[in-house]
Amino acid sequence: GENVEQHPSTLSVQEGDSAVIKCTYSDSASNYFPWYKQELGKRPQLIIDIRSNVGEKKDQRIAVTLNKTAKHFSLHITETQPEDSAVYFCAASIDSNYQLIWGAGTKLIIKP
Amino acid sequence: DVKVTQSSRYLVKRTGEKVFLECVQDMDHENMFWYRQDPGLGLRLIYFSYDVKMKEKGDIPEGYSVSREKKERFSLILESASTNQTSMYLCASSTGLGSPLHFGNGTRLTVT
Image 1 (cartoon, each protein chain N blue to C red):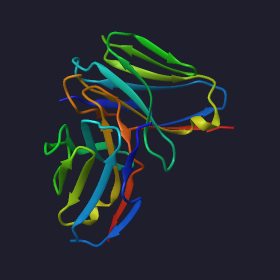
Image 2 (cartoon, rainbow over the protein chains, first blue to last red):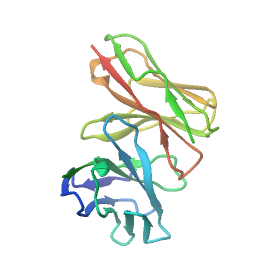
Image 3 (tube, each protein chain N blue to C red):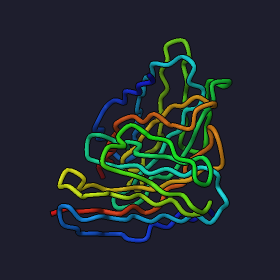
Image 4 (cartoon, rainbow over the protein chains, first blue to last red):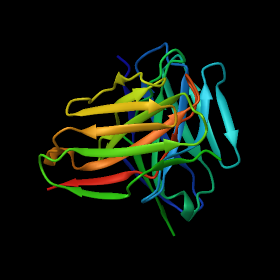
């Protein structure tokens, strides 16, 4: 079945720098790739998602890139701010399947 | 805005007790999910439901059962709570295949 690996498990960056989190997936049929942010003590919330018919999607300081050939996708956060500190989860699914397959999460720490 | 409400934020139960976790969504979503979240393990799917009275096992259904008698309500049942079921439980809902998940605030269950 599908497997999603996420790296790194912890990422510490200086405020204002960029952060990149990477995920790889195993099932080439996967075509939906969301990213969720979970702040401490709060619920996971969708921040951006991408479908396999596009290679990149941006929303202000956040972007996601997808490389279908290599079966990996990445979250890019530019000009990081203290409120970006959270755990980020990637996931993958096939449109015909109800289940999302999740990465283990990345704890992003923004140093002042 | 979608609202997914979990009945309890914190719950302490004794080993062997029958435990009910309730989840209600107000957006007429077809799909509802129960996840378990543990540090370093990400989000693991326990059960999901794509229609009233329908249920499907996720990755870790052992020791759990679910009930969906009404579209807006999805209950998770621990038939005989054990200490290894101490965890954060997250309920989520979505409109359909390949659509974003909307999470509740979670129930932190401690079994002593």
